[in-house]
Amino acid sequence: MIENKTKAILLYNKLSSENNLFLKFLTENDEILTGISFGGSTKKKKNIYQLGYFLNLNIKIKNSNFPKNISGELSKPYIYDIFIDKYKLNSLLSIVSLLNLSIIEGQKIKGLFESTYFIINLISSKENWLVDYFLYLLNLLKLIGYEIDFNNKLSFNYLNLDTLQFVSKNSNKSIIFPHNLLNKSVKINFEDVNSFFQIFEIILQNHHLNNMNLNIPTNYLKFKKLILGFLSKNEKNN
Image (tube, rainbow, N blue to C red):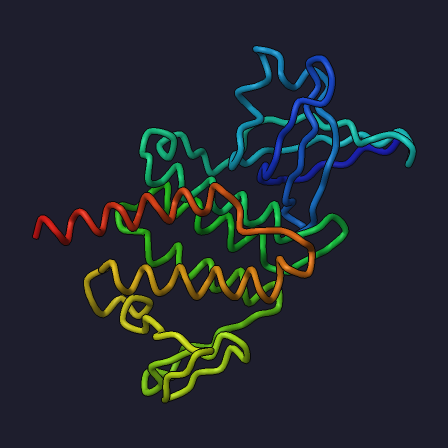
């Protein structure tokens, strides 16, 4: 029997049989790991295997014909505060759901775990984190092969959604890019945030998820609705 240890973030869990859980993680080695936690849904263990939790894992591999046997214990960053804030909680679930769909087992994307660790720790500890969340999404696109190099592009107001290049003139293939939002030079507003969400979704869906016959995850869309609803209400009241 082979036994390995690693640190990882939980991306997906599902009851597989009786009290056992099928689990999917992003490990500190930037790889996707799947396996079974035997008894993982019991009262003693189920609170450990929550989406977005960081865990120290012990992995036992009997042979290639059997699923990996996974056991885990909570690891830093401890993110309990996220679960009492609906905005932070939904942002966490959106990140986890995007990673779960965007990365396949056997694929290694250097820097993905570190950037995810950083943003979740930041969301947990800061009050003003929304723009950092958007920058994380842009970095995610970059890591999976769709970089939007917006630095030093302030003179170009539009992004071509086919070529992912900045352009000076609008067309039916372009959209206004929210430079000021990402540069943190203006107060966060509905128009800029809505524009960012549109850009991210179109690129992820058309350039990536369509290749796997997948769609933008529900948890991401819930977070988007929550944020846009808050901004819309706030601007009407002001």
